[in-house]
Length: 313
Image (cartoon, rainbow, N blue to C red):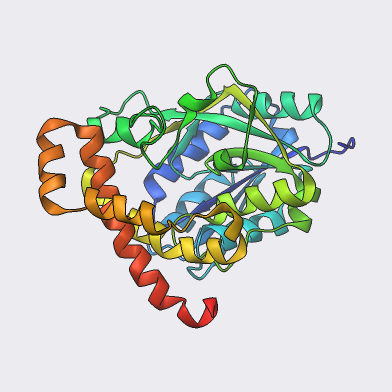
């Protein structure tokens, strides 16, 4: 249950070499309609080599509630754990460094937490492409999890599946715009084993669901704008990392069968076949992106099996 105290909410932002967009994120946080005395901002620099530190320090004379912490590069999960460790708020809001919050984002998160005050009740906000961006076909696919047969699609967000719903499951544990009770995160930190991109957020969401019956309430009014244009070229690294890390997830939760079995892997291999990808490229962009993603995923799957062979036994 929430208790009355001075600091209600802590915004924890892990960041890595994104000083310019982080500046926009922090500027938007200082324009929130929630009183500045009710929240703090905790920035965790995950080993950046740009001027991230200087950017954050420049804001501190304007608002003393901005705090900066540095760690060597260890991944977003470890960075979030450090942020939670230093945070003072009863509610922790995880925000991406490339998310520009709408003016009421913090107050909308807080509004639902006041309504759902139990420790195991969390709030998911809505993340949209920033209006200034020219959204290409690839970006549209990345945020449409229903573009293939109404079931499959991109690997960034799938908010269309939540249309008309007020609750979400662990698959929607999107750490770009999500808030939880501090006491819950003290007991269940992010697993530091997941150092690469992907799975550390879904893993925590599933762990909280299993152990604490997590209730994730969806608030489409808590909007964050994703200011990060994406291109097809970045898909390879993203999906290979996911393919590698899936072995760690499978080792912990084999019941979810995240490592594809024989028949699913066979289908993925057919989709990943060069002529098939070439065919889809000129027939259907959603199928083309999906087939390409499976090609890279299988590459990562193979590498991950070798990488974690001793760990997996």
